[in-house]
Image (cartoon, rainbow, N blue to C red; front, side, top):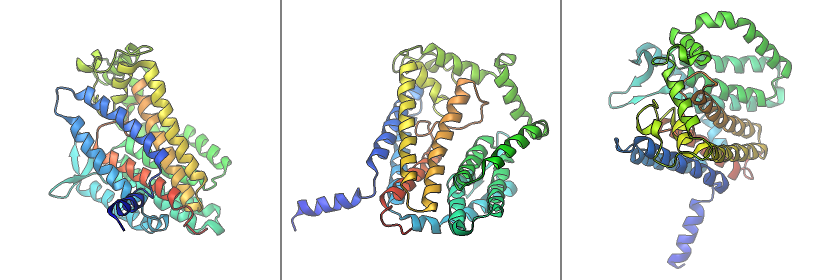
Length: 369
């Protein structure tokens, strides 16, 4: 066997579990994100280079996960959930408080944010649970699933980290919904939530209530809690139809946009590329979500379908909440824009999801029904 043949076989094996449509769409969004991070931090501390390194690490993890069969992923569901829950309790007891929030756990040589683990552990655990009781599914199983969701949700919200709690809660809800939760229960929950709104309002932290009031009237505190929304909406509006051009965003480079390379990166992109750029970005996210739902619909087992569906709609939730808060139609809750915002931990979590989608798709002929 010559070297060329050996290399071809090695390459074929390396890419055997890569779903290229999903990969190309993700890479396109990442390229836009990397360019926007560069623009947002130009002349700063080289965050674009650091983000490129984060992307390399995240894609390597994606490659390993994509090669892992769904049956193996299912075996990790309970241990990952239990470890995540223990770490969340540890944060509650021994966590590091930063800016009034206790979200981090010190390991001596580094710090971890256990709530990130739950973004993956939650859909894995609930998908495993419904797979286990697929043949005998009853209403009581939905109650147990809700409890499995509410415990980590409450621990994360208590930190407080409402943004991550919403993402974890959404991931769990999507699994329960796809498992066949009756619509009458969903409508009943919505009605109960609306009725309990006055009581829930008093359970919120002061800063959370202030964010909601700021959403209604940002000008009530233009230099305080309303500053983020006012400046981001100015940037988005000033972009106009075609934008000001790459590296030419005045709101960005005159330092008016806060957290411009993380949570508010969409404002930077909108100012430079305008409405046309936003439409292209929305098309890319739509293609990503569409591809994920195609993978979910073709999955051979209930576990795979539930997991793929929850991960895909999780991407939608990320994008919807971030764009909504930056545009001033949702409260600011600290949710990054998927595959665009700067940050290594969130990127690794997102690519774990991409790797799981690839695993479900490329192993679908090998998974027994």
